[in-house]
Image 1 (spheres, one colour):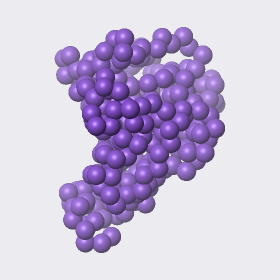
Image 2 (cartoon, one colour):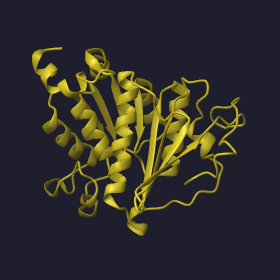
Image 3 (cartoon, rainbow, N blue to C red):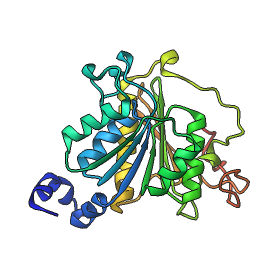
Length: 262
């Protein structure tokens, strides 16, 4: 680590739990961000600022005027540009020392099989239930930790699903692929920008802790945020032995914790 890097990352290095070793691990890590919108924007910016050595972004969408209320990696000047390229421009302006790889594509099974295999941490910032299931399936197959978040209206949630941990459920344990799920879109129901930013920022924090080796993470817990009341609630999660994706595991959501939140 050279003098410029020591200075750039000094406020993380000063953290007792982080230090030079933690920063070195972050610098040697590869992160995959699925989705470069409201959640992906703070994730991309914080991971770039923190010096994650290689960041891959995949999203098939383009910047629209309606995005700018909450998707802070984009700008008016970049309306019409692919979101991944717009986000990469913002990340490079913030930290030109890292490697950024972009794909203007939908994150389907073929893309995910290749990109997830290369990643040390996967951050799901998509807004599609089908995409979330596909990302989870790839993470389980390649034993990669997944930081999954969602936000709509004034509500948000996130968790870490780490298939390397024998006790961790996968996303499908909590939200089965076969369950009926009503897609909700910002264009229809709206989204409170700081709520989206809060979840994205927390996702970035969980991803950085995974890469730096600083814990504990949200593995085995579902964090729910209510921006109306500014409250956080946590639900304990356990594995589902009948899970269609990870299988041979122990029960979906602790019956004492309450109902699932979607």
